[in-house]
Image 1 (spheres, helix red, strand yellow):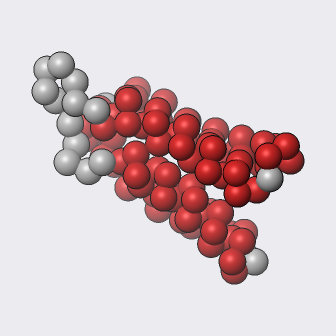
Image 2: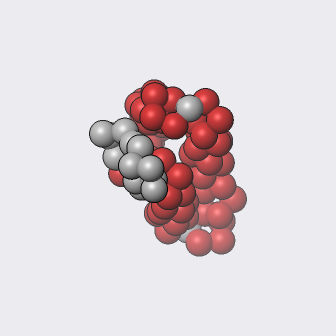
Length: 104
């Protein structure tokens, strides 16, 4: 198991990316925050869990970002961002951060 708990990083970067874009009016800032969070997590996952799970989790992270947009039309922006952030963080916890039976 990685010493870095990545589920909070996933949630913080999804929420922080939205907040950065919303507060600044610059959508590209969201991309910067998301890229930094994805890079930090991706490097940790690659070291601790390998390339297949890294690809799966990066896909989940990216899908969460993408899903927030159409979901916002139904729930509102902040509820949508919070929902997808919680879902992506939960998946990350289960697949990457939770200790395995072998203790790795």
